[in-house]
Image 1 (cartoon, rainbow, N blue to C red):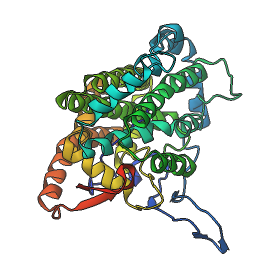
Image 2: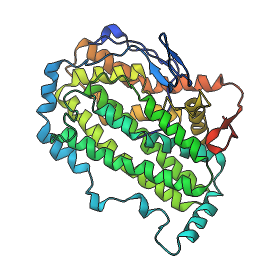
Image 3: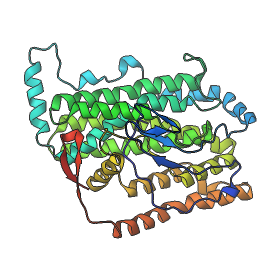
Image 4: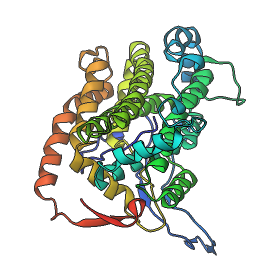
Length: 390
């Protein structure tokens, strides 16, 4: 999931809270710089953090039995999507071999290829890498989910086995991109490393409420977003002549696609056995909007770093507002939401809402683009303060 450049739509009409089965609260996100005052205590250091009233454990306890009853199904349908470690690619497969006599020549060749890549491309590639490197936060988030969390750290339930192995597969993504960027010499690694530390320290609350219905909808969306983003960075690398980097990004995208398959299968199963609460959960997550794992990104300098990074990704076509709408449209079709029958009145309203949402998102974004302010140049510390048009 470590996913991830994404778009948050503008003022999408909310699914009425009165029509949902659990009470929801609104969110306000804020960034705090070092030496921020929290309450009445002035702390020497406070990283950017999310501040909102949090809803927890919104899934009724009796629903946990659904996930307990799916252990055999998960073993047969989800765990099979994991790859044997011995058959997995590793970052070293794509990078200069430090034990080879030709190591320095290989590094020189990598750096020569990277010189053909423009600075705005590096902004997007760095942002994707930083998001991947915040992997500890994503494993933590999944382990907040009731009924599927890893209770001991080495639990033998299929849900826990999946989460650990998924994390292990995802861990290679940040490692590979980090080392590539380090060897390229095109970016300020210390600023990047600070951004990673800030982001992991900030954590995330995607408002999944310890609820696996919400959590697996969130991960389904995010894995597809990551697949799209890495696929587009691969395309652009190829356009600029760096075929090795294109292979790297494309290989990561393929992993994300396989992980997307797993999470969408889980939600598909929930639609099969509990369609009413699942469609309500889908409507709830879309009403709240899918918050991006890296939306608290901060480098110690730019309080609007994620917004600026996302604007570059939008301009380059790496991840756009259209992609956000396309993902929802894809998932609605994948889960056959329009064909659901036997729903409660609340469920039917949720069904109508999510099925009609993609074109509304597109219309709203078209209007937002028409009202967009004049483009401006923004400095990015990741590329030594170089200014990029957004």
